[in-house]
Length: 224
Image (cartoon, rainbow, N blue to C red; front, side, top):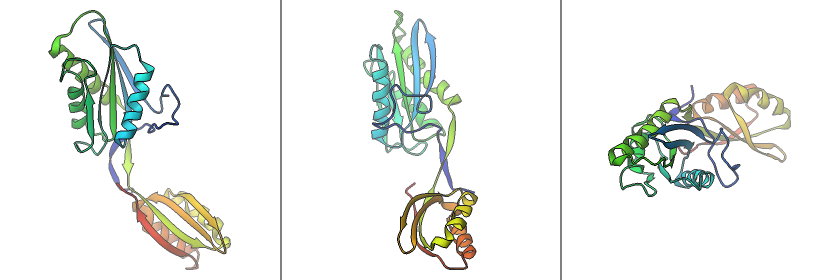
């Protein structure tokens, strides 16, 4: 079985090349009305402060006329406070960003960013009402957020002859592996990526299938 670290949003991580506005495979969204104010919660997958800020920027650009675009992010493992951020974006201090962040930090999901967009409806909620609205918006979205497993991956560099190409392609799907790079020289140098828990078994099976006539150059466990 793959080495599973924790759950993350089942969404793509956005960067400068991501389509605008964000399509559904980059953004999970929920909307509700509270005392005539519209609250739109957008959840994204971010594994760095930079990717979180890319997501936040996209949402702010999508709703430039909103009264507030408040946000929070926790882009490490669940409950990890090393890489977090939040903003009230004009709401009274401590009524939006911090309550949103508290929900993210108590979730069993890592690498997450949330933006709550508010269109004011004319009825003031008060500080307690704002905290409840922003906190509840994120909590309700997180409860139904699609998630996926974050897995530790490894990369294997190997050298094999041209006569072993078909055997290699036969073994790849058996170990959930894929070719990242290939260099055709006298022999072929492949860089293979696969779940780290499968690395030893893949190397052994492929070596045996080729009667020991290949060479495993190195195996690197990718950063968790």
